[in-house]
Length: 193
Image: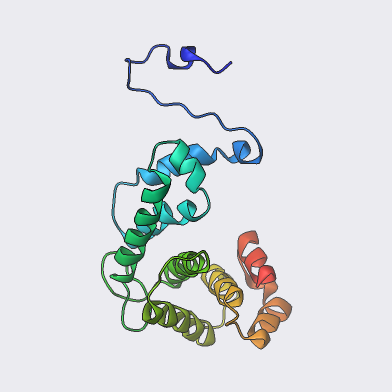
């Protein structure tokens, strides 16, 4: 039963509740969206994490009162502006300022920017081109490994979705290095690529 008793024991007006039904209920999408929205810092990863689900769950966000549908677009546009302000000249992204060195972060942010662009948000061409080129360069010069590669798998996945991955690289990693990737997610991303 979902009624006013759900707030029993709470000070009036201090509680919020959301009821999920259907396929998203298993993942508690509203709860996760709310938790992401309350991230306390403004680093590039957290800005991306707050904005990425809004591309697909804008109806859930609006129903939860996180923002109206028209304001969600503004939040995504603001996130794009904040993220690209932390992009280095080589296309990499820093957490707090434009620096490079974290391929997983680069892949994650580029993933968001490419998805935002695909659904119609304005991502500056220079920022997009540099981000994709940065992933391509990182994949081309990735050192040999016997264990790990999660960041590489994610970068290859993003590149493949954009039609920018080298098929030969994908075949090599799938045929010769699949056992070296340290997580099932990395293997799934490689397979999807």
